[in-house]
Amino acid sequence: MNRKFIYTILFVFVILFLHGDKLTAQDDWWKDKNYKSEKVRIKYVLCKKAFKDIANGFSTQNINFVNLYFNTQVYLNVISTDKGYYSANQAELILVDFMDYFGVFSVKYIRSHHKNSYAFALGKCYYNRGSGKRELDISIALKYRSKRWIIDQINIY
Image (cartoon, rainbow, N blue to C red; front, side):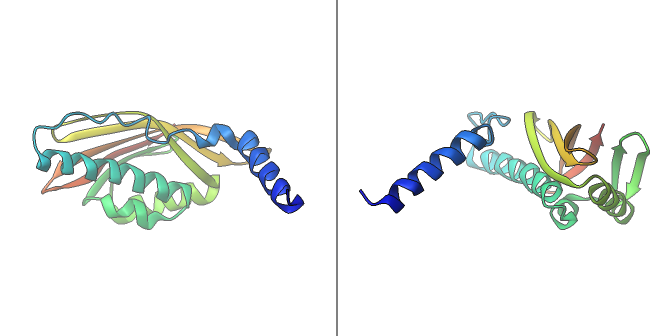
């Protein structure tokens, strides 16, 4: 066999071994149900997409993925320092400051629940601060209004 091919295979196995914990199924947090109709199924597909977009926004420190789901007011509880209802613009500034200061690099959901016009997801927010990787708990609640999912609350603690 070609030596280059063997080294490539060995490299792939080393990467899988070192990062195998990050390769688990990312959708374990979301329990799909048997929906009554295609319309209801699409509603919850959009809900799941909203949660994924929000997590992606935090993971890439790109507020544009998060503010897509802002309504006129958003409840924030960010490490108990910024707590209350904020306008979309204020919420955006608070979350940008949070992501910049903490160096958020990943959000992973652990579990979720969705029913009728309300959904929430609980997870971990990973960040680099000081001597390495640290984590905070995060919960995000969404409401279904006017045929779209909007952020009701974001709690980071």
